Length: 377
Image (cartoon, rainbow, N blue to C red; front, side):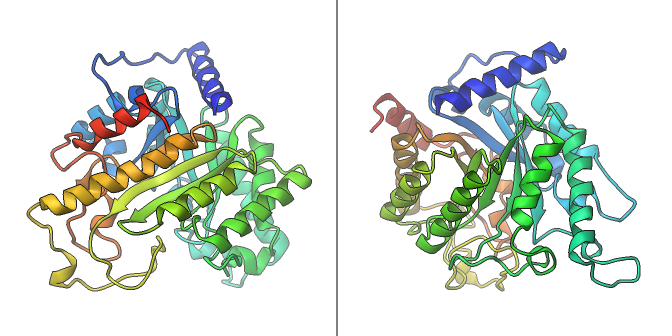
């Protein structure tokens, strides 16, 4: 997706004009250098990194990534926890880090059924808002947040996880009160607040046929009605057996045919035993700890390391095959020790989902991934 990469470079030139100085160039091979001709390489930053409490992670972030996303600091409950209260400190920190280090800044996420306070949907007496009042509240929030970072945030996950796996719309309060057009309205409001920022729809399990079809139908409807959409956020919360390679290729092919750029977002690999029969990333689903669910407390055995390596090779073979349609790969976290999968769906496990280990070291599989770049399929 050469146009997106060119737009990213123009975006960074704009930041220079605004007087923002870049950090120094690293001499050694890094993730962002290895894939620089294919797509941006991003990561999500957590609270400790934004507060300056994890300097080792920050070294990795500056050296290896050219895009950053807010893991939680730009969600409604963090930025706007009360009707008269806005808290921008952590979000401001993310934007400052990105600007200082020549990174595309991705805002995550504006409209979501989760991590949105209950007061958003109610009036001062606790009664549920009607459609017009909730639309007004949505617009006010979007204009405040997007307006604050106008010209600084490269793109926004405008709406997150609005579809069920069967392709139906999730029965959220947004849908109940506003109706099916709440997604369209959110995109319109963000575009009005910052006409230059990119607008994305983001969801998990988008390799499933029914959800894939639903998202594609939404994109077609947006295009038919001149609703701006600039990216499909294809969440990569995947496991050792899902999605199958066939499902992944089928989904990437289907999204590529829309002509809307694909972003692989929230990428991690869950190689721990499944706690229940569920494929996805619904944060409301939880399970109790059992000994058999946390088998690798002392480290991965060689057999599972092979599984880990092979799955990441599978993923990147697909990404490279469709690199003309994929503009960004974003990992959901910097290293294994801070991944959300240590505590979801079971609290207190030892997960190994990312390319950096708990000692902040890049895992050996990167050498095999780089070989793929030299001979794209």
